[in-house]
Length: 237
Image (cartoon, rainbow, N blue to C red):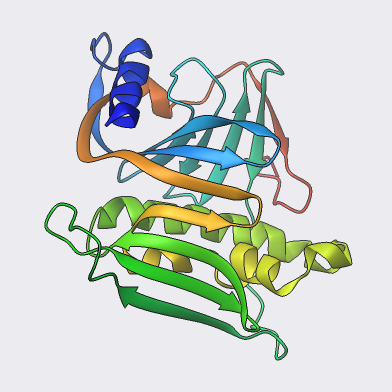
């Protein structure tokens, strides 16, 4: 309950409660994120039919924007006044013969239902090593999860393009599964309520299939320099 109050206040302070500009409807997901060596922070995800935006709940901070129709990710840094383009249209390579990716999905009959749905425990393995543990709500926030799956697929194609150049420690089975060959699979089992992997975990604190947000949140700064990520396709060409 305290987390929900905090996230509500956080969004109110960000200006979401006072419509000043043209608005549209977006699906909202909000997580509290814990990473090794970093103070816990909020991650807000807004999904529309055309865009997906990730930020820390502020309209005037840095953000990441996925153009869903173009399949391009833009990472915006206000301090540097830059927009990093992340894109690669090459298809993913075939799953390596020495990499096996499996999942285990079980309903948690002892957990209380949420929104009338029974939580599931989901685990993703690569070569029998546990990579990700999830608590999910099946059949919940499907359109938002579609956007997240598309976001992960863009990152996977870019990562695959530089796979040969990655150091050995970055080509471990779990890394390959999570970032390339099964990048969006965690969204196949419903809305992640809790997610835990090595060095990182997050917990859902709020979700809503339709909230009013400013159109400006999905517009790139006009005067910022655009830079293509190495390994990505330069959109200026």
